[in-house]
Image (tube, rainbow, N blue to C red; front, side, top):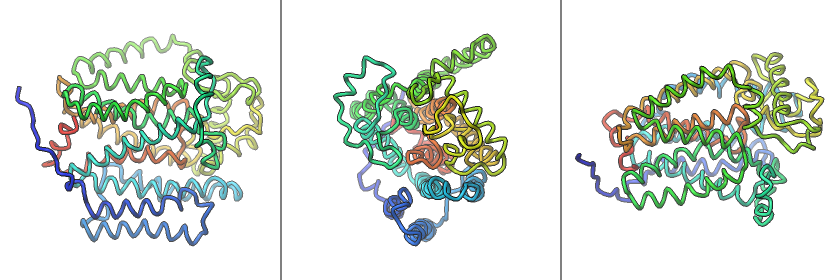
Length: 447
């Protein structure tokens, strides 16, 4: 069978002045919008103005304000309509403490998303550069988390190991004084890890030793950190992602998944839902929640979240404010009011609390359109599974992280939530690539 050969891409092909100017603007404004409490209102306004100037620069240099995507309408509705409403709906003190800081982060993520989408589709080298940057961010998060996580004791045998790991990065952020939350770290890694895994498997099949080595170096810390997180919801998401990577590239694998799905649907009515959730869900320390079990903790929080969605259906209760308002309006007798529940322990319920049902519908529309776009890449994976594997990795990331999100949440506007927008930007960038370039971005040179 003939194989595709391609001469090495010169390093100069990865330099692009319009793109790198926008990246510099994003880097300059990130500290201001990620830590708005440390800056004056005028400085925050200037930072937003600088980001807006990047769009003018883009129009002047490459001739477009932005690249259109299939998700334009729900994206703009979520950010331009429901985000302001979610800030307005928050009570005054909580608006300053939670809603506005998270809104600033989301504004930065909004500009990041359009930078990636607008430039990744211009040349395959830029697309590959963003894929490499995405993997690099996952690696950085894994390494940082290794030295800054608040370790759990779900698996007691690991406790001596945790005692030997230095944590110089604990307390780096104001909302993580005792260290990063291990469950959150697992959820963030699930955005990136399946993509890197798919590319590493592809390099293995292509016998590309150099790319295989790079893949292993990037993949290993993420796998280690996911394992040490002891996040059962993270493990569940990873198993599903691994299943997608292992089966979807093959025709027989897709049929196997279809048959397996039918079997699961058939036996689902006979499965104990309580026992199933108890196996995969993670709870805070028992003493912090008055002895509530893992499943009991989530049931109590979910019930309060559903009450909140019912009472604040159209506006939400305010971005990030559920952690405080829930105890005022919906007392949770089994959970101490001094305990910070952080979020609703379900990304989709939390998004409805933040943005109301209209915002949740917009978010689900974005997810649905992203899945449709990823599915359009899958037929390019042949029976040997050697092409289109990045598309498989993107699908695996959506599946694995969505499964995790049913039991936990990397909330909208939280600092690591940018990884979601990077993932979505990569997915929608594939929809805006000119047809004549799509073969080149079918990832055979990444494979």
